[in-house]
Amino acid sequence: MSTQKKILITGGAGFIGSHVVRLFINKYPEYQIYNLDALTYAGNLENLKDIENAPNYHFIKADIVDEKAMLDLFAEYKFDSVIHLAAESHVDRSIEDPLAFVRTNVIGTVNLLNAFRNTWKGNFEGKLFYHISTDEVYGTLGATGLFEETTPYDPNSPYSASKASSDHFVRAYGETYGMPYVVTNCSNNYGQNQFPEKLIPLFIHNIKNNKPLPVYGDGKYTRDWLYVVDHARAIDTVFHDGKEGETYNIGGFNEWQNIELIRVLIKQMDEKLGRPAGESEKLITYVTDRPGHDRRYAIDANKIKNELGWEPSVTFEQGLSITIDWYLANEEWLNNVTSGDYQKYYDGMYAER
Ligand code: NAD
Ligand code: DAU
Image (cartoon, rainbow, N blue to C red; front, side):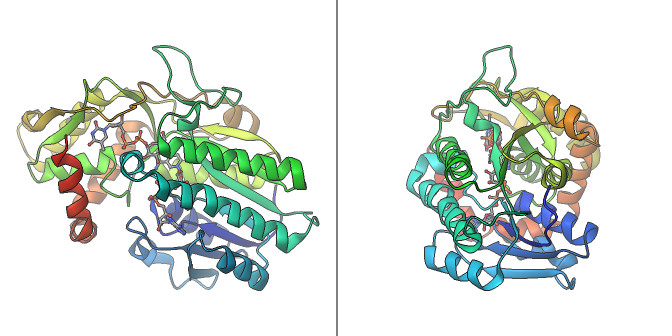
C-alpha cells in the first residue's frame, strides 16, 4: 500500500518490533528504517545486534509519551510511514499499574498521530499510519466461535482497554482528518527474544532451572499462538498490500489450552535437556488466577489469508522447537534480562499468588 521509503518503526527494540525491523532492513535495503524506542525494561538493543550496522538502519531513543519530542522528531525526519508497535504489553503489569498503560498505549499513540498529522497537514498521498494491535480488544469467547474483524470491542483488562482505546483513536483520525491507516489485531506471539514474563519464555526458563511452573487458575484458558517471524511477515504483507482504512486479524490457526501447551513444551524440553520423558511435569504448580482472566481467544485469520495471501509458514511444533533451541543457546541474553529489576518484579508478582 505505501510506496514511501522513510519508515518509522516504534518499539523496534522489543520482541515483535525487533523481528519486524530485521525483516524490513534485510528485505528492503532501499528503505530507510528508523527504530524509535524508549528502551524500557522490555526494550533491548541486543535483539538487533546482527543488523545494527546496516546502512539503512537508524536508532532513535525517545519516549512516545513526550509530545514535544514526537513533534520535533517528525518535523526533522518527515517519516512517510509509521509502523507503531511501542506499547506496554504485559497484562499482569497492567493490573498492577493501569496508568502506565494509559500513558504509553493511549497518550503515546495519540502523540504519534498528532505528529504524523502535523507533518503532512492533510497531504497524505502515499503515506500510512500502521497500528499494531491485539486480539484481546475483542474480550473473551465461550467454548465456540472466533474473533472476526467485525466482532465488537469488549476489552476486559487495563492492557486490552488501553489497546482498544488506541485502536479507536487511530480510526477516529482516519475519519476526522482523512489520515490513511491500517490496523491489525494479532493473537499470542512466541519466539526468539520474547521477554520472559510471558508464558512460553517464562516456562522455558523455569523448566531449564527446575523452578515451579505457575499455572493460573485451572489451566484451561485457551489462546491462539503464532510464531513471531510469521507475524513480522504478516506485517510486511499488510504494510505493502493492505487496504487503507481496513482491519485485519492475524492468527496462527493454532488454539491450545494452556495446560496442553505446557505439556507439549515440557515434552520438547525434557527431550532436549536429556531428561526422562515427562520428568518436568512435577514442576507444574497451580496458582491463584489472574483477575479478569479471559477464558478463550481464537482468531479467524481468513481475511488476510484470502485477500492478501498470507498464512503461517511453520507448524507450532516447529516454531516451538526453534524457540526452545534459541533460549537454550542464548543463556546470556536470558540471564541479562532476568537479573536486576526483573528479579524483583518476578518475586513480587508471584509471591502474591
Ligand atoms: P514488548 O513489550 O516486547 O516491546 C515493547 C517495546 O516498546 C519495547 O522495546 C519498549 O522499550 C518499547 N516502549 C514501551 N514504552 C515505550 C514508550 N513510552 N516510548 C517508546 N518505546 C516504548 O512488546 P511486544 O510483545 O513486542 O508487542 C509489540 C506490539 O504488538 C504491542 O503494541 C502489543 O500490544 C502488540 N501485540 C503483541 C502480541 C504478543 O503476543 N506479544 C500480540 C498481539 C499484539
Ligand atoms: O492475545 C494477544 C496478547 O497475548 C498480546 O496482546 C499481549 O501483549 C501478550 O502478552 C499476550 O497476552 P496473554 O495474557 O495471553 O499472554 P501471557 O503470556 O501473559 O499469558 C498466556 C496465558 O498463560 C494466559 O492465559 C495466562 C497464562 N499464564 C501466564 C503466565 C505469565 C499462566 O498460566 N502463568 C503465567 O505465569
